[in-house]
Length: 559
Image (cartoon, rainbow, N blue to C red; front, side, top):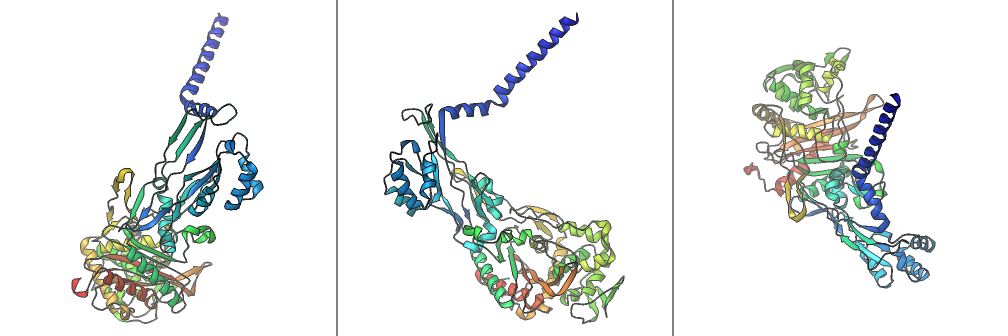
């Protein structure tokens, strides 16, 4: 009996193995087997697709393609290898021996020689009238704005297989949409690998990549880039960045950084500057952060613009003494005056009203500790310190923007919510994606959440207008315009302590205050002319604002 059962089990196991193997061949491995079989009878040459273009809002080009070609050879039909290698090597600048090895590779029907050869080179090759030499369109990336839009566009390099791939910025984030689909030439071959001229031949044309239309305003971008370079020279800063956003849509109208690079020649620059600092680098915001803390206290009805406090001297926080930035004290002052004088002592008073738990809740509401979702490949987000690790001194210093790290895009998004009735928008660079047959996909503005009420947003706006009109930088403000803003000066942490001589100066604001067209953040790292934001970043902000008012034909009477 056991022999019958053993035979039955063996039969079942053998049957299961056969069924499993057949399933693997016919279902799981069918595609790879079909490809392998096809490769025994056909040879293929991939035809590169044209990468999609990137346009500014007015459809002027930020990134386009210029004509270029894949130069290839068909070794099987070269009649005189010596003559071929001698003439082609002179034009392409390839060593004769290297070229000879390429064109004499066994079993090769097509051998790529040069990728993205420019028209002048191709014209010289065509004049040789050599059999076995072929050309296919392979467009080359061209950046009309060069370094002006480098941090928006990113660049195109090669992946591990030598294929084009976008890195950083829009090129990286939208690489799949921009890439397109390669075409192919498929030719039937004989047993020796030679093409059968009367055999099956097929050509599938490539599908070009999709185009992107960005929110970027080319005129605003030019203004920002030019003024940043002027500011870097004037104030002797090591680095600088500016971002301009529409607070109503979240659309990024301009981004500029120094130092920058040329995306067409990215390999000639240090890799450390490839990432966009506006989305990938953190900094301590200093006093610009005060408007967010104050708006939280206003929303919680813990203070009003006329609430008073005593600024008669330093405030003690444990073993530490918090002083004003200039060691000047004004006695009894209102919350509006706290922002006007940029009083650290006053902000400690506000932070204590909030308490650590409520303070941290508003940090989260304003989007700190999370990515903004901006469509750029390299965005990062500094982590917030765990709630259990916060102490009174941490709350005090964070109230005036020290001891807390964030990215410029996080800061401009948060302040943008104050300019937009309390609603935080997701920052976006791309407005539309244009596909085949000009089919357009519009990416609508996206509301994230309401951080403060519309009433609170109006109140803090008026307080920020007063901070501009009565603050240290009022001398630089364009006359007749209502601008809401705040200066910032933060010491740079070095090896566990702050360097009093090294600062990051900044100014954040929006205008016109009653109907904002833009929210803008200007940061300068280690300016040598002055360590204060009121004497560096603020005047640079106001210079750009004046240019924007002129560009948009906004007069003091039309606000």
